[in-house]
Length: 203
Length: 261
Image (cartoon, rainbow over all chains, first blue to last red; front, side, top):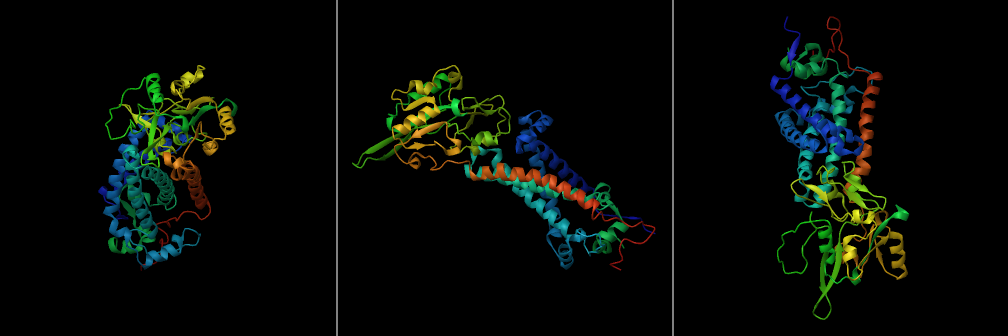
C-alpha cells in the first residue's frame, strides 16, 4: 500500500507562507501602539515608539513583497471558481451546522480562495496607503488622511480574517496544519476536504 | 479648562503687517532663519516651518479703485479645545494640554509619526531638523506659566494680538459687536479671531472640524476594530463548542467521506 500521506505544499510554499506569517505578526505588534494609545505598552517590545515605527517599515516592505509573491504564485488557482465552489458558498462550507456536508473541492475550497483574494487585496491596500503614511509631508493632506483611514480599516479586517484562518487551519479542521508544517497531509484528510484535488494527485 | 483657559483675540482689522510677532517669536524661542526667495510678494516666509511658529499671511485683494487692498492674518496653532493633533498622537506626553488650555508639546517624546500633520484642521504642525520632531506655536507656555504674555503679543504694537483669559477676551469682543471666528468650534479655539472679511478669504475653513477621514479612523474604525477582534475570537470559540470541528474519522474505521468514488 502507498504511503498514508500525500504532498500538499512544497518546501518553497511552506517557507514563503511562514515568512509572510512572521512579517505579518511583526507588523501587528509594532503597529498596535500606532493604532491606539490603549496599546502604547507594545512599543516597549521594539525599544519605544521610534523603534516600533522602524520595525513596522522594514516588516512592511518584507510583508508586501512576500505576501504579493504568495498571492501571485497561486493567482490562477484561487481566482477561478467553478460550480462546486458555488455550492460551497451557498452552504457556507457546512460550517454552520453539525450535519456532515460534503463538498467536491479542488486543492483550495471556495473559502480558502476568498481568503487568499482578500489577503492579496489587503496587501495592496496596506502597502499603497503605507507609502503615503511613511512620508506624509511629501503628499497632499487629503490622500494621507484617507490612507490613515484605509490602513486602519484594512488592518482590522485582516486581523479578523486571520483569526478565522488560524482557527480553521488548526483546531477547526484537525489534520490541516500538517500540510503547512511538514508539507504532507493524510490521505483520509485529503479525501474528506479536497476530494477533487485528491483524485488528481493521490489515487 | 474653562475658568483658567487663556488665549488670544486676534483682531485682523488692527493688523498693519509689521511682523513684529514673527520676529519676537523667533527671538524668544531661539529659532533659526529659513532661507526664502523673493516671489513678488511682501509675504515672507510663504508658509509656517519648523523654525517659524507664527507668521503674517498677506492676503491681496482689489480695493475697488484699481489698487491693491491688503488684509493681514496671523497664522499659528489655534490651540483647539478639541485638538485633532492630540486625538491621533500615539506617543504619550508628546502633545499635551496644560492647565491654561494650551496645547504644548515635548519634542523628546515625539516619535516622528507625523499623524498630527494629517489630523490638524488648520495644517499647522511642522517637522524639521535632523531628528524630525514636531514643532508649532505653544503659546509661549513658559512665559505664560511665569505670568507674562507670549512674546508675539508683547511685541505687537497695535494690539492686534490680545492675550488674556479667554472668557474675558471673548466677552469684550462681543461687547464691541465683533464677529468672532472659533468661539465655539472644536470646543472653542484657544485663538479666537475677529475677522474683517469672510474666513475663506484668509484661507480658513468656514466651519473648522476634525478631518472626516481622521474622525472615521479614530472614532469609528478604532472602537469597532477592538470589538471585531474580540468578536472574531469569541465567534471561533463559540463555533468550536457548538458546531464543533470537522473531525477526521479514525483511519482504521470508516472513511471520512464516500464521495468521489
